[in-house]
Amino acid sequence: MVAKVNSPAQRRGRSHLVVRVVLLLAVCRATAFGQKIEITAFGGGQLNGGLDLSNSIFQRIEVHNGLTYGLAAGYLLGKRYGLEFNWAYNKADAFGQAGGGVPGRKLFIIDSNQYFGNFHIHLSGPEKRLRPFLLFGLGATNLSPAVRGVDSATRFAFALGGGAKYSLSRRFAVRAQAKWSPTYITSTSDGYWCDAAFGGCWVVGNSHYLHEFDGTVGLTLRF
Image: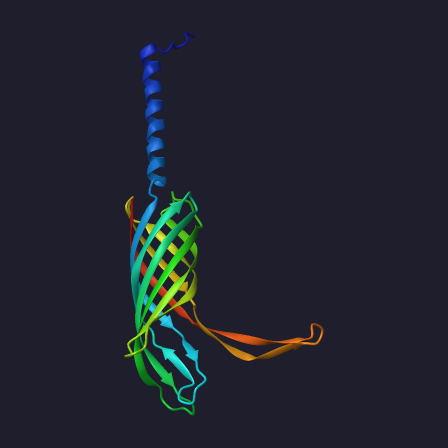
């Protein structure tokens, strides 16, 4: 049996093929991990809660549900994590609920602007077309009632949620998410708590939050 000896030209051809394959894999890898910035325009529906009152006219204010829309700008940190700034707007009617079964009365329209810094945890790598994620956010909500002589107020808020991103191409993706974002409004006294061991009494506070739940779908641009 005669052993087949590769010529220098054949060896060079195979070396070039190996180099081309390695370069192709490197390009594919760079393409997969190279998209760091994401800009998303989104819209959807928002479910709003209400606030209990302690006056002689109304016992509670209910904020009706409505539409929401906004923008998000994010930066991906490695394969699994990301940071983003998120702005969302909602406009809704606020109704005063009196006691004794009296029907509620519309009091005013309230504009809500939420500003969050969100932290994302992706549950799959960037090579996957479908990427579920969890989010945690801290920020503020600006509430502006359409009432003459009443100024807007900005309050602390946080957000918990999750969703998924589905890649349509290198540059575009669809993003769907659901989010719960309570806004702190005020605290009221709930009585006193006394401890004989420490020999003192303290006021017990009750914090009031305006709860908001939203579900949105958006189009994401990557670059």
